[in-house]
Length: 265
Image (cartoon, rainbow, N blue to C red):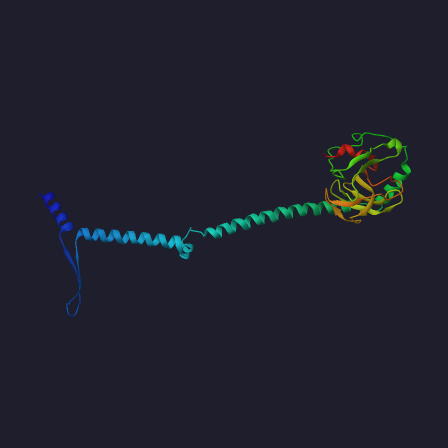
């Protein structure tokens, strides 16, 4: 019996019409009335909820107000932050490379004796053919890899101490550019009687490279140079020359070694 009454109550509440009236409190006159039922209320509430969901979605997707919603970031702002972060990383890497080069440059300058080039030139002129030939291994040279001073140079004369030839001669077209075989500091860039326009680089405390018979020197004494950087234009200057070429020497512990043994390619 009680169950039947409950069903009747809910059926009446769902289908029975009701009227919502707004009245004036003083005159008791009817100002607004609305006929309702349980079904009408459910439909109206559902439509209002759907409308609120649509409006909220529109606000989030198409208006600047989305930026004030916690956890919702601007896509363009995120892309800008990512781009700036990548640029900062690139700048940091560049600064690290520059710092390493500066430290190397300062270290090389501190190790460079200003009179070393003059002493070396005088020494090599007096050495003659009395030089005691030793292998590079006996002199302690290991893991040294250099770039060629002339990328397309053709070997004209090889290293031959018995003839007083302490380097190699490379020939190329007139106007070809010679490059530094490794990072270093220019310790001599001037004219010599035998070698003409000569430039000398110090790479480590023990290793020095010499470039002779140039028509033009592109660096001055004290300049820091990088591996593969142009330093001179080959030519036909000096007493000991027979044509346009580059005479290249490599010295280790003030003794000449065969440069061909240390070229990376």
